[in-house]
Length: 321
Ligand code: ADP
Ligand code: TRP
Image (cartoon, rainbow, N blue to C red; front, side, top):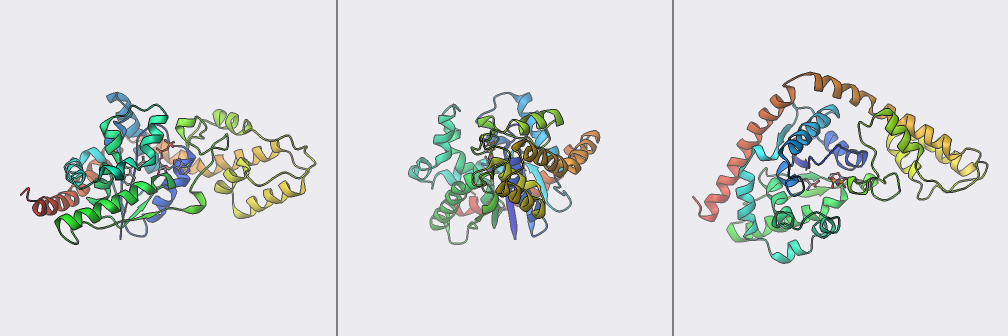
């Protein structure tokens, strides 16, 4: 079974990225042949500064490794180190109906958030399809907001197979973890860097404390029972606490007698504890000059060997060679 996923290097990771996608992806690396990459071609739709992009790529690579990506187990690489994917993207785009892309929410959402409406932004799902199809992927673990793109990928694969021959490209399946499909941000909306409501994975302790203690709450008095439904504190706590700790907090909500300040303190402690080992690993990786570059270079070589094979198959089928 081949598992593939990518993340855009668009700034520091937040715990929505971690629980929405990365944690599941890291668990899957033990269940099959995992291919994980840093989607730097995709980030060009929003980052127009070489130094910034290079810095984000490096940060994301370090974060991935710190969180437990094992380069001995999976192929970890940078999207643009495999330029074959852009050629495949062009070929795929010739069978992609306009209507399929016009239906994609993410294009409209991104424009609404002020990202400029470029051709690349519109064609982004086709490049994502190429990312997935070029590695003959079976399973694509992503957050719920990416599910539509995996469905577009399936449609494109089917169209390619109809046009150029049955079985030419493997039709992949999305893998969404429903229980963490949407991690709420500090304000209760979906956590997203575009909403400024994130808790970063490696937040400085003082900033973390300020953010968590500042989570808005209702004015239920300390002694009264508190609503568990829609509570951001509980939703976040569930991700980082043990089941027993979570049940204890739910009990305290329902009984009353414990204030929101105390709940926030418990949440703060649990978030810090959860990410401490990764924080330590991050420091070690950062100190090892050259390690990240070596890992990515080796990943690129392995990924490229697979990509070249698929592209050759498609070029032959399409009459390009
Ligand atoms: P952002 O919304 O901060 O820009 P991205 O769109 O770059 O995040 O998301 C990267 C990955 O993380 C995707 O797979 C996405 O589904 C997942 N993800 C992002 N935010 C959340 C969230 N709040 N809950 C669950 N998954 C998320
Ligand atoms: N579009 C994804 C995101 O914004 C990143 C991505 C690019 C991706 N190519 C992919 C994810 C292929 C999974 C598979 O998060």
